[in-house]
Length: 122
Image (cartoon, rainbow, N blue to C red; front, side, top):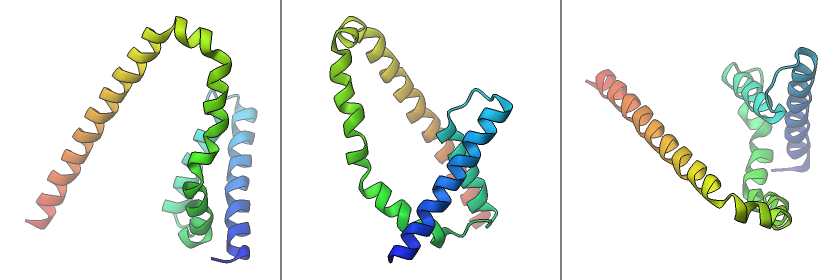
């Protein structure tokens, strides 16, 4: 890991984010720019337009520092304490049911992948 690989990876990630933001602005698509940027990055990595080793070091550092990146969001919760206390049931229900849906969907998806893998190995 050297400064050149970190700067290259960070520049590529920012460029993809810039492209995603431009696409959303130009076509007026109702998606968060970060989501479209992740989709574009995934497609670029899967098609080998961007090599994994170009962004790997930068992504590793960003993942290591992810907890620190959530601090501003956690602190801003304090600004909306009254709203959160007033709407606690709706917030809790949303978190609970969305978590159940994600867990069930992930389990079903992994089950499908394991069955397909078992058929190929047989």
